[in-house]
Image (tube, rainbow, N blue to C red):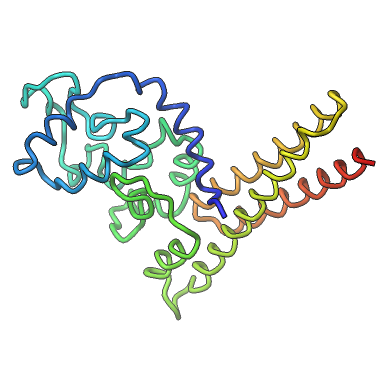
Amino acid sequence: MRSIIGVAALGFALAASSVAAQPTRCAECHFANLSAVPSPDYLGEWEHSAHARHGVGCDRCHGGDPLTYLPTEAHRGVLNRTNPNSPIHPANLARTCAPCHQAIAVAFSRGLHQVLLDAGDRRSPTCVTCHGAMSARVPSPAALETRCASCHTSGSAREGYPALMRAGLETLNGLRDRCDRLASAVEHVPDATERLELRLEAASARDMLLQGIAGAHALSVQTVQERAAAARNQLDALADALAVSSR
């Protein structure tokens, strides 16, 4: 089953396409000087990531000048992640990711965990916590449950949260698969006007699923559950309409 979180990659690809053609010398220089650069393992993660495939280089998150080989100029403005002004400081990560991942970054920035990060609580998760610093991995619902449970332990005020979030994401994944099947069936409806109307219904359901994923990034179980329920109702209506059109 494909992860519903993966649909966010569409927005990422569209946003990143404008920079895909821009050459970057950051990675070239770092690969040529592996023994001298910090965290060389990150280079390998980046090289095989969606960021690399879409031309999103080091400068997009770290700053600096990607068009020069001069070390001083290349690193001008680059700040350590511990610096509050750094784009990769934990409290700033959502804003740094927002240009490509706007909906989910905005959702996260409006949640309680961003409030905790802004207050200096380093236990709070960031984009990197679930997606990695370079690899841009998509965690499974089970992996996310484990991550959440590391803070929301048994006996804590929100001990049920990790299991609820996992269930919500698994529901969204299942609904996404169903939406794909129904959308495919829509394309076989012979009447053009009716086919267009059904396409719009499928798109509306898909949008509701995307809102559910935004809710997951806001770490709001309630939003995930509400959007999943709304999407299920829309897909039920779409299935009924397809059944009528096939008679």
